[in-house]
Amino acid sequence: MVTKIYKFILYTFIGHIIFINTNTFFTTLNPKSIINPFFIKSRTISVFHLLHYIVFETGVLIPLPSYDELNKKIHQLSKKYKIDPELVKIVIEVESKYKKYAISRTGAVGLMQVMPTTFFEMGFNKPFDIDQNLEAGIKYLSMQVKRFKRLDLALSAYNAGPTKVSKVMAIPKIGETEYYVKTIIEKYSKIRKNALEYNLLLQQTE
Image 1 (cartoon, rainbow, N blue to C red):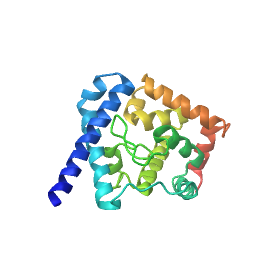
Image 2 (image 1 turned 30 degrees about the vertical axis):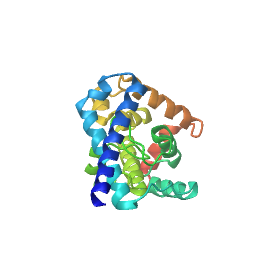
Image 3 (image 1 turned 135 degrees about the vertical axis):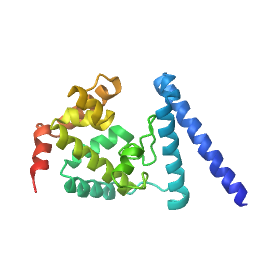
């Protein structure tokens, strides 16, 4: 019985990796996105943490908390890290479409699509736990707003990494990042006319 369980976990692990790699190819039509060693490693690590969380933490695939519960968590954490919760909601929508178990082609995980390395460096240990994933993502986004003091650069850093943004102090010439920043700012501008100023003001409040 135990052997069957271990086999099931192993086959699920391998199957999920194959699925993500296949999905990556068909969504990008770029073979490099599959064979890139860094992305392969990140995707594999992310799948491992997903299965570990399901087996040892929840035991089953549980649904997301209600919208009201999730909204409350977002507002509490946004207040803690001094960032607009409406911006956070849009980032989640664009990043994962509110899918708790989402894993990107680069290996980013969860609602906020945080890279595992970044997640652990910030002191968190359960990437697929909703509370930890939200806090890690919101904290990281807030750090980028505070660092770059420009919303477009902060979003670029969240998507492509702060190192790439720091080198050019502009949105990197990466198609995915350019589209990502444009999409979020367009959605956010419909809610906040002075989006950047609003978030910088939040950063300054005590």
